[in-house]
Image (cartoon, rainbow, N blue to C red):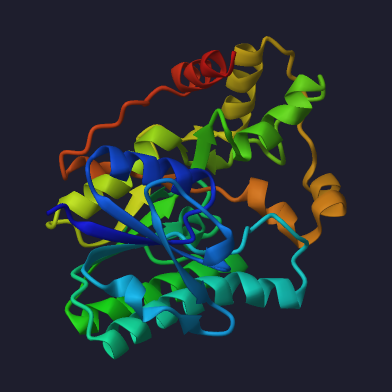
Length: 306
């Protein structure tokens, strides 16, 4: 019988594609969702849970071998009020706590727990090459990711193999960060942000989904892995390449930090963080990226959209 995989927080861009790929590979897939009775996903069994109320249907864990947790409020969806910041952290930490408490309560035989994390773990590190042994950075995003990963690591005490994927900027034809980044370019006001020298760790969605599947299937994988291609680009390079692919001009001056601050408030840190991440650890597992070159990746995405 195929392994049964339970996903949480998988209704977004990455989750939808991951579900499709898992089903394609013959896995049994079930999903934790709020108001499960009102939703339907083809060939997927849905179970109720509520992270904030800390309620969950323990039947969801029957026969489950692996859990993939992608849960988390959107980082850039709303302004960073104190309340919103706490919600961003709670959605990640409390979801893991709820799952592990349910595993103990149901005496479930879960063997593997694969958790999303983010390159925000490293904070703003200029040109420093960041591997998975690098110390965490400072600031809200780093603090959030540290708490997120610590919550995931609760599974280790239960004898569960825990893998955390520190996701970079996900590039997809279907949505995510790329349309937001392309919008000013398409409006002929594209320009590098801040100094333009900050490193952007990017990954094509196909490679990210395959990385999660690799984490499911390769039981030698453990702890954290950078979920980004081996060739991060600076903001300035990314903007120029995007302009070339879209056949749009890029302004020769950068958007100053104070302008971003005026528009985005504290969230202005998001496009200004520099994370020069290494992909060597995931490469050492034998994982092969399909998309290595930024220009070719963007061309493939926009060709697919036509």
